[in-house]
Image (tube, rainbow, N blue to C red; front, side):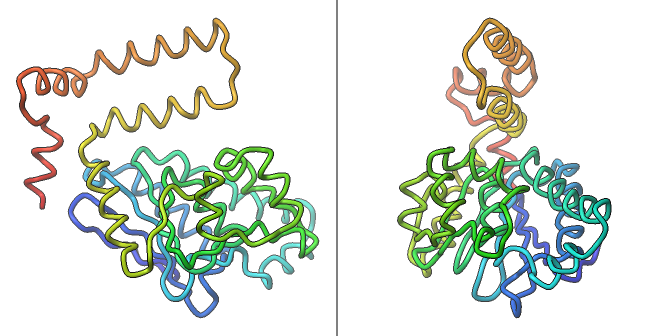
Amino acid sequence: MSYQFLQLEQHDQVAYVWLNRPELHNAFNTTVIEELHACFKTLNSRDDIRVVVLAGRGKSFSAGADLNWMKQAGQASSAENEADAMKLAQMLDALATLKQPTIARVHGIAFGGGMGLASACDICIASTDAKFATSEVRLGLAPSTISPYVVRAIGARQASRYFLTAERISAREAKQIGLAHEIADAEDLDKKVQEIIDALLLGGPHAQAASKQLIQMVSNQSMNDHLLQQTAQHIAQVRQGSEAKEGLNAFLNKQSPAWISNSNNNN
């Protein structure tokens, strides 16, 4: 599939999804959102892809919504406006629910929806020059569709500050509040991303997909009998799978499991 505003590259078992609208700092419009959604749905069906990296061409990761697009959406009917917003919400959900581990490779600015993309990824690696913001309130808007992912990443208390002030968040601050997992100088950013990729490729793909589902299941739930039963059922299903048997046998026999052997063969 060809894209107008995306570039999809594959290096062995890793897919790189590049936002490619650099002249507008990779700002979203309807086409960008639809292309991202289609790309994520396609990647989710591919067993040959183990890790997905989301990145931006040019000077920025993403400036968020194209303001001209937002203005047009605001002038549409209520039904059209809601349908347009739903496209963004569904795209973010497709990213957040990818079966593969996802990495946001952030440099430059990640504002509004750009910060939402970074938050929807499992892991965020930022360059020291990166700046984040939920800038919506300064435009008379609210960070509605990105809020589930940002609040999950930084917590409600930090969200209270940054949603309401729209202050810019430095890379160092982003790491302190849990938005970025690691920061690196610009020249070392790809090296740091590769370190995380290498660590991810050591895990079983089905176990990682199950672990992602587990996080979704237990987040924001209080510990009760229902959650205890859910977690017990979850591990019972996982350990009955062929991948669990392979991993345990390999460990006990001091061998590498098949998924690591396959990864090495592809390099």
